[in-house]
Every structure is written in C-alpha cells, then in structure tokens.
Amino acid sequence: MTKRKIETGIKHDRKPQYRYTVFYQQLLEGGYQVIVPARPGIITYGRTLEESREMAEDAMACHLKGIISDNEEIPEDPFVKKEPVRESVLVKV
Image 1 (cartoon, rainbow, N blue to C red):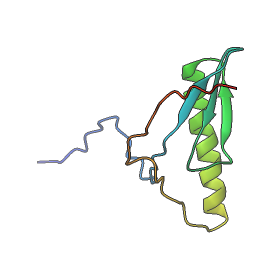
Image 2 (cartoon, one colour):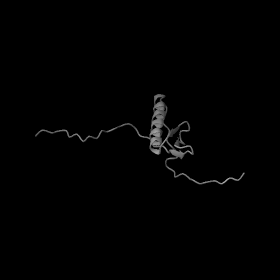
Image 3 (cartoon, rainbow, N blue to C red):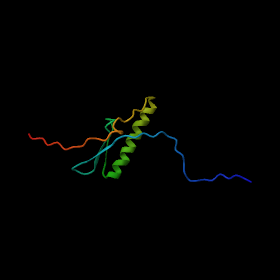
Image 4 (tube, helix red, strand yellow):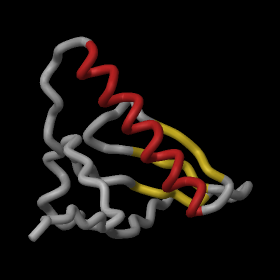
C-alpha cells in the first residue's frame, strides 16, 4: 500500500504574530486617522475604515520589521489586555 500526501491548500505560516490596540478616529474632513497607542511613532490614514485597517497593518509590519532588523526586542502592547475607558469630556471656556 502506497501512502499519498494529501494537499489541503493550507499553508502554515510560522511567522510570529503580534497584537496591538489600534484607534480609528473619524476625521471631519473625511477618512480615518489611525493611532497605535503602544507605538507612538505609528500614525497613518485611510479614506475608508477598510483602507485604514490595511494601512495600520502595513505600518505595524514595517515598524516591527525595523525593530527586528535592529536586533531589538519587540515590545508587547500593554493596552491589549485591558478594556479602554472611553468618555466624553465637556469643557467650558
């Protein structure tokens, strides 16, 4: 009996994965500003929410690749495990 290898079409990507909290702020002039609180240097923009998500992933990937190429340790996101407090503040001036 001959054993055959069955191809499932699933490729196993063994690259490490990192999870970061991302904020999508809708702008008055249109589009979304993307902010990653744990990585203050990462700010990007997208015309739609979907494009903003893609831009965030791309910006994070580029940033993390830079950290890896500099042989630095990739920091964890301290915000990812906590639910953010969100509120509106009324200021009178």
